[in-house]
Length: 330
Image (cartoon, rainbow, N blue to C red; front, side, top):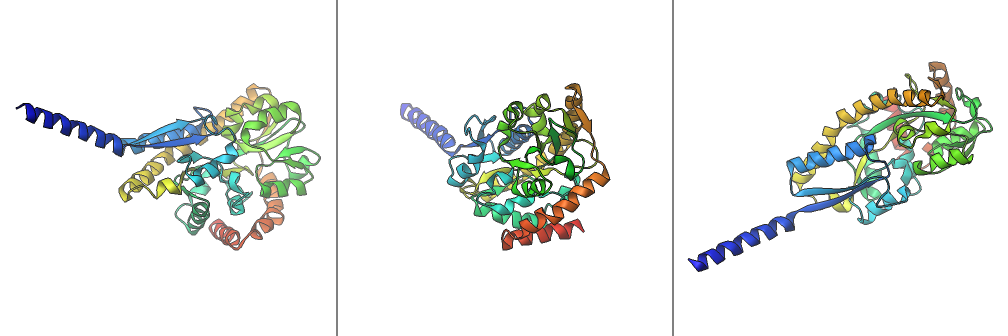
């Protein structure tokens, strides 16, 4: 009897050890503060995965708490030191200039339009670029944005002449420079201080970043809200290919289903943020202007003359991506 009890205890201990050994804990990092829509989306994804596979756990590090320089997250994914992150893919254009397609002005009209690009040749080509860089795209999260500055209202391209601008990507930089602006590159975490100290006069960024970084406190004019915008950017949840390749086919299916489960709520949250950002700026006594169709067309015409040809010359893969985007835009 005593021997049987010992055998039972040993078996139980072995079972517990096996369960713990099979638990997979993944590190998910990003630069956004807790409560930002990208943070909310990441947490919903983690919850959905764990719901279907309790052996997979997540440690989430918001607000650049694990990697202080947001531009280093793509490298950390590639070498496997982190497992997942939420970043604008344009942060990695230094190594993969093809990613500029995900912010190229005039390609997509809004978030609804961006949804048409999912499950197409465009997505397939984009995924190939990502995997070559050491990560796999999980979600299809697109964000709209606008323009804010300290000097004067921004309407048509000629209104940025002489201003110090943050453009967010080389294609936008090309467009802004051709309109007469001086352009600086920096991550979202540095924008508030740059505006406060006069390093920047204005910038383009997402609505969520305007709110989470409180940029309405340091600007006097904003072009946002309404039906038209020159700023729409891809900021997906991505996973290191080192981690992705270790998952079983069943786990990959769970991850893809969890990513799809975040889409409706993420898009709905963007609509709420679009309305909230206007309220935030107006409450801070910033003069808000909604871009008109004519103004939007003037920016698109400039982008197609400057940024688009430059992007197409980047590489054969970039040319294919632009052709796929143009085909969808017809």
